[in-house]
Image (tube, rainbow, N blue to C red; front, side, top):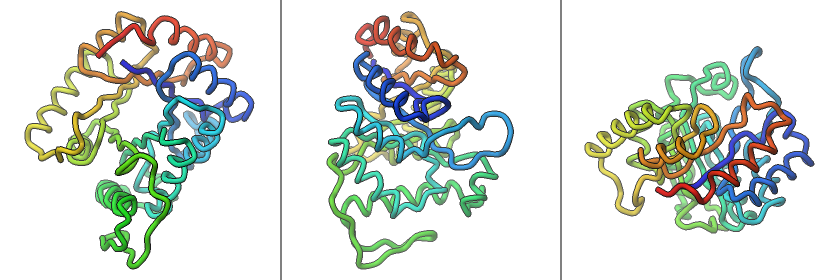
Length: 276
C-alpha cells in the first residue's frame, strides 16, 4: 500500500517556508504522494480556512521536492476552463519530471460553481466534456466540437512527460462518478469512509464495472481512500484487504503543532508495513 498526505495547501501551510519544510519532511518519511484540494471561493462561515490555489501550490511543491508524486485532487473540473487547465497541468507535469496525478470531481458547492459561471445542473455534463477536451489536447488533436467547448486549428506543446497524459483519478461516491471512473479513470478516489463503508462502496463500484465498458488501455482501476482519521497499522491493513491501494491521510482538524509528528509517525509505523 502507498500513503499520501492531504492538506499541505491550507491553514498555516500557506506560509511558503512551512509548506516547503513539511513537503520535504513527507518526502523523506516515505510518503508516495502529496495532495492538494481545489476550492476557489467557498461560502462565508465554517469550513473555509486560508488555502492556496491547487495548481499554483503544486507547482511550488514540485520545486521543493524531487521524488514524491504530486496529486491535484479533487480538481472541481466544471469550474475550470479546460483548454487552459490542460496547459497548466502539462506544464506542471513537465516541471515536476512526470510526477503529476490529476484527480477530478464534478463539485457540489453551488455558490462556488455559480461564482465561476457554472450551473449545478450542468456539472456532470461539463465534467465529461472537459475530460474529453483535455485528452484531445494532450493527444495533439487540432479540433474539438462540444456543447460547452469548441476549438479549431490549434494545438498545445510540449506534451506531458507521462504519456498519453498524467493519470486521471475520478472522485465521488455517486453512481455517475462510478460510471465516470470505470469509463475514463485510471483510478477512483473515495473520501471519509470507514473500512466497512469502503467495502460496500467498492462492491457498488465493481458492480458498475460489470455493466460499463472499460478501455483496455486504462488497466486496473487504482483505489485511493482518505479515511475519517489517521489509521493505525491494523486499520491500514484492513483497508488494504478491502481493496484500497493508496491511503491519503487528511490533516484537517489536526492541531498545527501535531502535523510534523503525524508525518513522522506515518513514515515510521505504516510506510512499507502494509501491502496490497
